[in-house]
Length: 148
Image 1 (cartoon, one colour):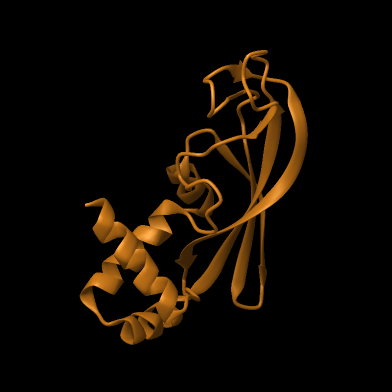
Image 2: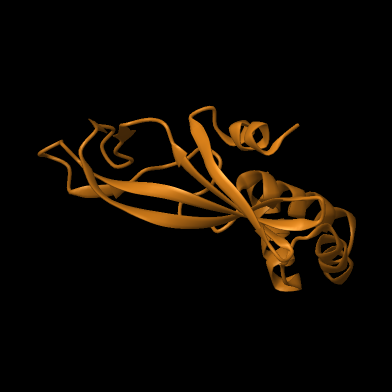
């Protein structure tokens, strides 16, 4: 599987623009192919872009290299006059709102965290190219256990 296919596993509408490796980190620039988004507050579909920004997300490592997704994200105007929110950020099914890591990376951290203690998990993840603290491991495991 190449990098583009791995990115497409996140979402079929995502396109990889470029990738570059700096030391032990691979930076992958990507964007969504869609030209519209649904307001998470009222459900109205909008294609009126307010602004753009870069969202940095951690993803699963590649050959023990840390992976950072540089996602060119957009904010949209809500076109519903009755909606209390005038703008909203586009949402993605592969990351929670305001999260700094993809869902698949969070699941991976959780699976190791359930198996090992937090200090061993941090060591295992570091060897794989994932930088997290023992507190982060505990927080992820605790949050996942609450949702089950």
